[in-house]
Each structure stands twice: as C-alpha cells, then as structure tokens.
Length: 365
Length: 194
Image 1: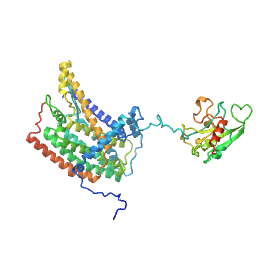
Image 2: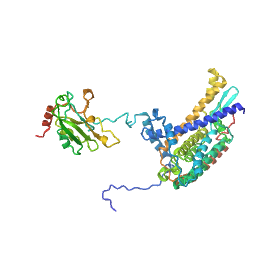
Image 3: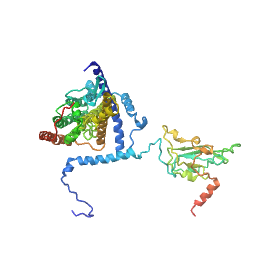
Image 4: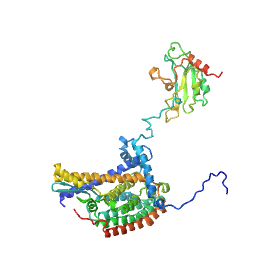
C-alpha cells in the first residue's frame, strides 16, 4: 500500500467516524419522530424545519447541564465508563465495508476503514468490550440501581453473545472467510444468479437479529436501563454529556449492528444488476472503465446505507411495538431456545453443504 | 356455586399452540398494527392541533373574557348601576360610580357612569350572569377570547383599560349584538315568563 493510498484510507476512516456520529445524532431525532408516528402523535417539530435542529438543541442542553458526581463514587471510573462505551461503539464501524472501491487512474480507494482478514472477529471483540463501559459506569456510580443494571447488562450480553456467535458460525462455514469484504463479495458473483445470505441462512438471521436487539440493549431486551424497575439502570447517576455519551453509544451500536446485518445477510454494498450496469455504462454510454466503476461504487454506498437505515427503522419500529421481557424470560429465551436453535442451524448448514445443496463459494475476485 | 345471572363466562386455560409459543406470529401481528398507525400518521392529517399556530374553534356560546361595550356613537353603555356586581356569584366585580360632567356627553351615554370598573379574573367563574343582569347591554363575555395566563396575581384584575372595547367600530368585539337599551328592554320583556 503506497503512502498516497494510506492517506486516502485515513480520509475514509475519518469519514466513517463522522458518519457514525452523524447517524447516531439523527437517530435520536428519528427515534422520537418514529415513536410519535407509531403512536399517532406529531413528534418534535419546533426546532428548525420539521424539528431537524432538535439534535443540536439536545446537544446544547446536555453540554450545559450540571456535571454531577455522586458521593462515594469512584471518580476516575465514573468518567471512564461512558468514554469506554462510546469508544468501543465507534471503533467497531471501522471494518464495515461501505462500498467496493473508487478508482482514480493508479489510485484505488477502498470504501472501508480498514480491511482485515478477521473483520468479523474484530467486530465481535469490540462489541463485547462495549459491555465494560456499562459495567464500569454502573459499578462506579455507588448506587444499587446502577449496579443492578450493570449486572443485568453483563449477564445479558454474555448469554446473547453465545447465540450470536453460533448463528454466525453457520455463515462462516459457507463463506470460509472472516473478512467482511470477502463475505460481501461472495454474495454477488458476476454473470450468475447469486443470492444474498439471508436466502441461505433464514434461521441464522432470525437468531442474529434477536441477539442484536439484546446486544444493543434495545427494547424488548432493554433490561439494563429498564426505567420502570431500576430508575435508569446503569446511567441512573449520570448527568450532562456523560449521560449523552451513553445514549449516543447505544445509537452507534444500533448503527453498527444494522451495518453488520446488512453486510453479512443482505449483501452489503451489492445491488441487483450492478455488473450489468457497469458494462452498460462503459459500453454504450461512453464512460471510461474507471468512471463506470466509480458510479457503481457510489450506487453501492447508497445501497448499503439504504439497507442500514431500514434496519435502524426496524429497531425503532420493534421498540415501540413490543413490551419489555421479564428477566427470567430473557434468560430462558437465550439459553434454552436461541442457543439450541443456533446449534441446530450449524448442523443443518453442515448437512446441506455436505449434501451439495448449498454450492461452494467461489473466490472470484 | 350456582350462577345467578348466567353472565359469568367460564375461562379455560388451554395449553398454548406451537404458533403461540413461538411468539413470532404475535410479533408480526403487532408490527403490522403499529405500521398501520405509522402509515396513517405519515400520510394523512394528524389529529394533533399545533396550538400557537392552530387553535381549536370556540363554541359560539363559549363564555370567555369580558368586554364593556360602547354604543353606535362610541359612548360607554355602562351606567355603574351595580346589577352585575350583585348578580355575580363569585363577587368578582367592583365599580365606582361617578357623575358625567359637562362636555363628556360624547364619552358616556347617560349621566351616571363607571369611574372604575374592575373584574377579578381569578374569582370570575365565567357563568355569564353579569351579562344577563345588565339592563344596558353593556357587559358581555366574548366567545373568542380567554383570560390569558399571567405571572402575577394582581395582573388578573382587569380594569377599564383592558375591558372597554375600542372606539373604532372596526376593532370592536363581535360579541354582543349592538342593541339600544330600548331594544334590550323589549327582548327582556319577551323572555319574561307569562
């Protein structure tokens, strides 16, 4: 990799970072508007046209609120908790491929923060670190409700990470690669009818999406914050922007979970007839090969964000439809239903691969 | 025990079917219901009234903020007879009567007039009895205005500066038919029970 393309890659990382933050910011607005619409209300519409400046107003409010430290709190850890939650949430979006590549003569820019061959493991590792932010914050608050929320968060993520990992193993068995870019490219082979992984792994996807809800602490699995039982759960004692960081981290996590789902199960930046479009552009529209590739790559970015936004919408839609699970129900669902189902899914996938029903993946690129 | 009314239904707790235990069909049912609401809120007119810009229409018989009327020549109708204050069940109205001086004929309709006239809007129950009691068709409760909220209690005591309607006929309150006292007398006699 040349120095120049390294610079380009740095730019891409910055852009991805900015986009994650921007999306998280506007998720707060979207959540309120979607909640309002689902409940026949209007939602925020005072700040700016259609209330679009509402996130800015919220940020100003959060920054100007009093910074409160509970007595007996471990001050260093109390500050460290929300920082860790935010950092881990932002780190995981680095390996998501948001597009194929742009080509300017010799320079090739991959629309992905970093391409590593253990991309999926990296996401998993970072996401499971995220629970430490919640645990440390909940413990350092010196508050029983915070501690209860933190403990719930810990046991909930451990339980659901298992089922999540097992449901992904079935995908890995088909793809033979942990790289998110490889998994994306495998879902569309030029000149062939090739289906996204959702068609081959419907059960795995179902398990994954349920676990994603639990991992991001969203309703119906938002027991760590559970305002009806635990005041505010792990962020009971938090105020000002430290509270804001926790809320932001949740939305960044939702964004990352949506991105991972669209990459692994819904073909990522692939969209139907992309290669035909590229051919057509360069053959009959007089585009140069580079320009045709760039147009298709940008359309791919649009495609992946369309998929991500529909998942984010789904997260919010479910949140305002379903009531919260009880804690024993949550544990029973995780351990006695999802994990056995995921293991069954692995066996099923293995059997189908051996029987030749699921074709072998070609490394065509 | 024997049921007396035969209305009590006996409920059986059946074991759940597989579809019920799987929970997913019920989730999809719920999701379609909320999506229908989303669609309705996003495409059709919402029921919410955005208050400062939109207001709910008042009923034509709504009894709101009082107004002291003027007659056709712009003279104050009120003669400070005190009947409204007597009729008021909340004792919200006070007034001081005075004698009209020479040269004030264009200001006050009759020789006696209200030097001050105050209504305490915190006491007032907006029953409209003052309006009914007034023999000069001077006090009315407007159908399109409410006493606005204030920070201080004494700001709720409305004097003549805020009660008497403007001189210009264009700015006058729409409430209160412009009756001459004679017409009002006639109406009242018609309404008397025989």
